[in-house]
Structures are given as structure tokens and as C-alpha cells.
Image 1 (spheres, one colour):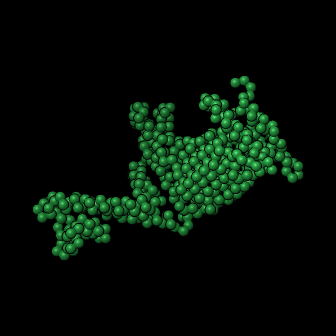
Image 2 (cartoon, helix red, strand yellow):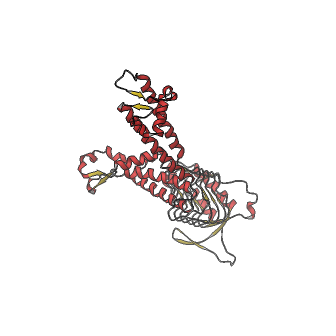
Image 3 (tube, helix red, strand yellow):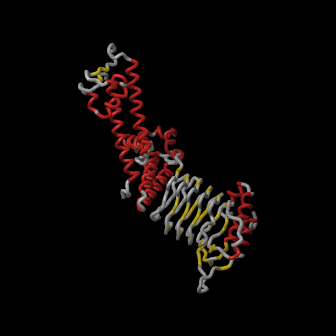
Length: 432
């Protein structure tokens, strides 16, 4: 391409039509864009919307190869603008339904619902943007990278129902939130980055969801996810959101387990590595060079810690879901009862020497008719009866004794997990 194309001409025409912003003392404000000092320009909402819609319409019609080749210069350039409602916006009918790649860096936006219900088709940047009124991104969809680094939110901020589809984290690094932030029912493909940020009390992540397919991520990405979830957990602890804190703790531990406790190679010498090793995670084990130098590496995981972490997650999602633990409590005891019943039906107690179920002299009628259920209850409420000669149902078969021991241990472990999960979910204040 030689010279500016239509998209660049459109941007040039838009910015040339804008006037400098002046304060009450007739002084202009200077912002830095691409290393150059330029005056802050003023734009009405209708001017921004008309420019953005026309740019998006032209951008959508371009081929994908051109979009990739000219990605650095093809974007809606709203950097260094003071965007506010003006008299000509009273009869505004159109809104931003779809938006091409855009940059609003170093701008001041004094209209709250400009970006609500918007589909962002590409990357969008809001670096150093000052949102002076309630900021609404409700139900918006982001297909590209999202950056809010050092942005300032003066009033309430709403990201409820947003869908962050891009395979990079939405970045809110060092963003300032003066009032509550609502991320309820938002979906993130990657955990958002909120390092050096704080959320005020009243903020919420109710119903938030994250991409669970972390097995697709490389080790480096998993480590970033781990740090992002740890930051979220610490932030929610500051505004006493104990339920949000428990959810992020669970996500943090999953990433930690997969990134640091899963099979990952720790190399003693850098020369043992190949270009692929260390970036593939479990895929390292499929590389022949890994096994040729087996003496040069060791597993960084501790198998017992890994199993405990997995077991805790499997039973109660790291103590954040009491209902799952309750389900496993009933499931284990029901399965135990089924196995006991199978033993009673399949084997004749009086004649078989393989299975030997003996009743004591004072057996209740219920125990005689429902032996399996009674044995389950007996093990639950009197664990010592399993090896006692004074129990209502005396079991001599070692395999059934082993099954009973498993039932008792599993039940009491799950009861402890239920108690911890209930405390985590319904405690009055954060543990921090």
C-alpha cells in the first residue's frame, strides 16, 4: 500500500474535525500519545458513534489477511478525547452495537452507557481512561484483547453478563475503582489481571464463570492464571467477600496443582532442554529427548500432596461447595449398602465359609429384614461395632470388614469437609 487507505483517511477526517478541549479558565490539557504531546480534543457522543460505526462497517468488509497485516494502524482512534453528551446528542438514535479494534487511551469519558451491549470485534484499549460517570459494559462481548490498565472509574462500574472470549486475560492492572464493581454472571476465557488494584465493598462476582479447559494452557500460562486467581482471592478478601474468596481459592489451587504439582520436568542443566521442552507441560513426556536424558531431571511434584489436592477438589471443590460433599456422603453410604446387600443375597450366611455374617442373640427385627441398611447405620453411629463381638450384626469376613472401614473413614472425612464447606460459605466475615 502506498499512502493512507480509506480507514486511515476516515480517522484523519474525524480527528481533524474536532476542537481542543478548554477548561473553565480557557486552558487546554495536554496528553501524551505515541510519545508526542498533543492537546486533549473534545467530541460529542454522536460524533464518536458515527465515526466508529462507519469505521466498523468498512473494517468488517476487509479480508482477514489485510486485518492482520495492518492491525497496528487499523483501529478506531479515540485516544486523547473528552467524550461527553452535547446538545446535538438529544436526537441520537444509533448506538455502538459492533465495534472494530479501538483505542480510547488517555481519554475522558463522561457518558456512562456508551459501551453497554456492544460486541467488540477486535482488541480494545482503555489505558489511562477516566470514566467520570457510572460505567456500563453490561452484556458486552469481547472477541479481542481487553486492556483497562491505569484506568480510573469514578463511580459504579458494571461488567455484568460480559463475555471475554479472547485467549488472553482482560487486564485491569493498577486500575482505580472508587465505587463498587459488578462482575456478576460474567464469563472469562482467562482469569482477569487486577494486580495493584482494589475493589470497594459491595463489589460482586456472583455467578462468574471461567474456562475450565486449563489443560490446553502451557506451563507459563498456567503460572499466570495461578497468579491472577491469587490476586483475585486477595482482593475479594479486602472487601470481605468470603464466598467469592472461596471460589477464587478453588481456581487458584487447580492451577497450582496443574502447573506445579502435575508431572513437570525440573531440569538441572539448561543444556538438557530443547526448544519445545518446558513449554508443553505434559507434552514434554512425549518428546524423545526427555527420556534420553532421564538422569538429568526429576519430578517436581509430591505425589501425596497432588493426590490430597485432587481429592479435596473432587469432593468439595476445595471447601467451596457443600452440596457436592453432601452428594458424596449419600453416594458412598448408598453404594456401601448395595454391596452389603449383594453379600447377604449372594451368600448363605449359615453354610458359606467365604462370607460369614453372624447375628448376635438380641438382633432387632429391622436388622433381620434389612440387614444391609442396618449394617450401614451401625457402622455410621457405632464405628467400633465393626470389630466388636457385642454388635447387633457381627461381621467376620475380612473383605466386608475392609469395606466397612472404608465406609467409615470416607464418611467421617466427608463430614469434616461438609462442616468446613458450610463454614466457608456461610461465615459472617472473611477469614482474613
